Length: 435
Image (cartoon, rainbow, N blue to C red; front, top):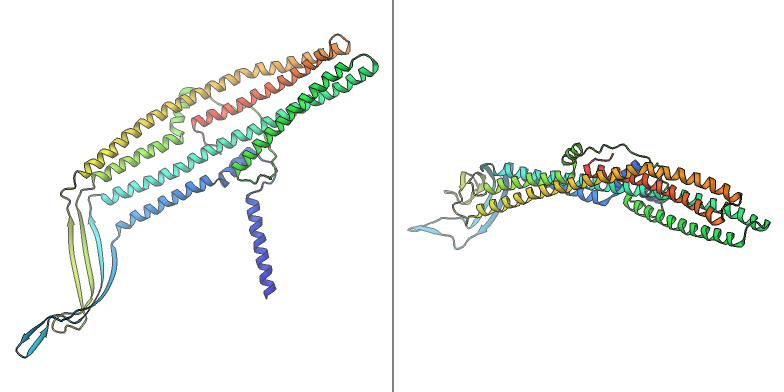
């Protein structure tokens, strides 16, 4: 029996370990959609915001409790002495018992309060809406942060391919140069200059590999993966269709941006606060019902007898030092400030959209030029190789041609990357939600 319990405990611990490992590991290649899902699943910021929504829901439940009566039970015992008595000759009559018992159940209910409860409930509901919008805002920011890291890694990995291709070309050229030295058609200087170019390219490769590692560390941290998790990115640096019509994009931005939604929620909350403040000095009407058992009633003071109380009470504020007016004035000032903040926010969003459109237009215009530069660099390299083979140009001229091609390919790759990033930057400025 003891052995079976130990086995069960070991199996349970292993299953928990497997579950924890699965939450912090990655199976298969990492696509953009998978990266976003992992980020939104494992980010503690989202869990924190969800806890705030739960707290707001608890506040709503608390506020709804005022729609129900307050019911309580009360038990008391007291002994008094001396006992008050009235004497009639030789007779004495106790006015109260020495031992006093009292037990009752009472209920208090608010009959009418001029809408105070409803106003407070509506105000509390706005807190939940604001907390929910905060979750969307955090997801929106984290999604675009993930996108930028994902495509940056893709770009740097593609840059590494270009650099490796350059190194392979230089090494092949180095072999040819060394053979030419052996045959006497080239000098050691040609070999030395080629080796310098190879070493420079190798240093560039090391820098690129370091960049890849740093970007992957940042992405794994964002997705909640352990630092030693292998990461293989699956995706392409391909152009994405995107409208650049300013009017339609501005309308979308004002409708979709989470900052605008949160500011409008704050506006609604302040209006509710103003309503609550305006009702703060209104009268309230309450009903009271008590029923219980108590001794001390004539003619048998020690016998417990049923007793009840039914009543109505009204609370009518008369003067509170102009507290309501001060509260209303404070909320109105905050409301005015929030309206100004919304106007400022719209200006800021308009600038962001216009700048994002400008950046995207610029990167689009550079595409054809960058592509043409690659073709021209390829043609120049073909001619340079032919000329070098025929002894028309020097080794240094050929190396320059090979370097120019690598630089042109890298520039073309960077322009494509900038187009992708600028497209997502425009979508972020507009407030598009990434699925």
